[in-house]
Image (cartoon, rainbow, N blue to C red; front, side, top):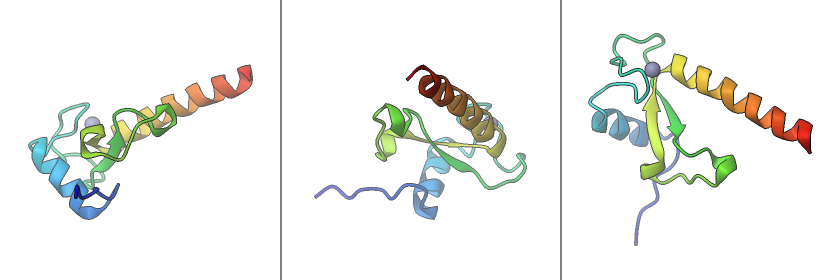
Length: 84
Ligand SMILES: [Zn+2]
């Protein structure tokens, strides 16, 4: 049985960080240099577009990139809702 990775668990995060060589998936800055240092987990394909919690859909990003992306996503969502 395939073990599902729990989204945003410390283990998932540390595994992804290791896979990415300790760097942010967007700006490629080492997490040791980003502030705050704690990396965040990202869905490459957002859940609202059918993304899953599989490791292949997850990436570790620094806090700044995560915030930036989150804002873009919220803007998209708001546009969608405004249309509906
Ligand atoms: Zn970054």
